Amino acid sequence: MSTEDNTGDYASTIYNSINLLTIRKSARFLCELETDIMEDFAKKYSGIMIFLLNILDQESSVHLLTRLTDSSIIYVIEEELRMLLIREVARVSTNLDLLVALSTYLEFIDRPHPENAVHESAREVLQLLYKSNHNRLKKHFSYLENLPQTHSNAIIEQMIQRNMHVAFGVMIFAPEKIMCEIIDSIARIRPQDLMHAPSEVLNWRFRHDYDFYTRNAVYSNLPDEISDSLKELARVRKEQSVLLERIEKIIKSEIPEIERRNAVLEVVFQILHRTNPSLHEILLLELKHKNLLREGDIRILNYVYKRN
Image 1 (cartoon, helix red, strand yellow):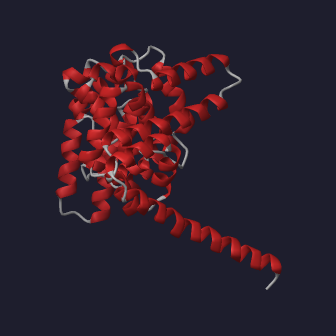
Image 2: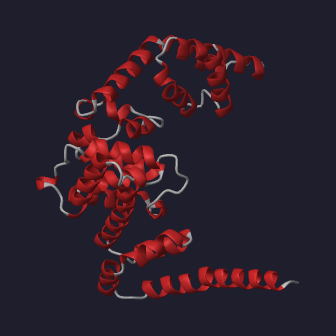
Image 3: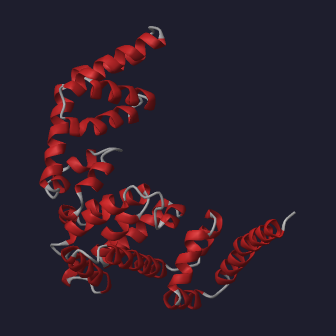
């Protein structure tokens, strides 16, 4: 074995030792601290806490989170968001307008607007951040997914009450599950602030379901383009109800599976043909959630529709 091979082996051994021993040992040590000392550490050395929460396995991450108070977790979240926004400021440094907008948003992370109001420039900034981060494989704040939903929801609600700019910012960078929890919490607690949410986030949320957002108290606060989309979806549901019933009857019929599948695809294609293309994805996913379509069916329909 060459010297270069030996060096590579040593490097791998050191790397594994750091990951498996040093990091886990540090996490265990922190978990043994008293609550007030733990909270003080999280505030003074939030960077280390952010690193640990993002690098630890699920079990260790949950254990560490359960030793933190909710206020400590929110503080760590705010610090991580601040770091992410500073990175974005550096990325747009050549665009003065974007630089000013992002810098203003960053200021509101530290100093909330009076009465926790959302600044008028927030939607523009959030749309910029969404477009910049949506397709990135790495999502931040994924440790929140490891908490029981009741606990993550409680933390999200406290974030919303404390600083809406933080809640919106975390929503953009977080994994899909947390993003949906945040927008749902905003819809429940402060529906008047939905007008600041990027359309892309709301449309992504509607991929799962959207009935809650059709309630007047929520619906009346949505951005115009989103309320128009929901109005269109309601119209499609009503007009195509006969076709949807036909799909359900086909699914329950005893005809051979291949014939049954082809018959369903033909009916769905008719629905798509009569519907605004911007709503196709939501409609297809709605049918999938109702177990009327499979993932493979959606791919076929998208392919056939684009060719026609």
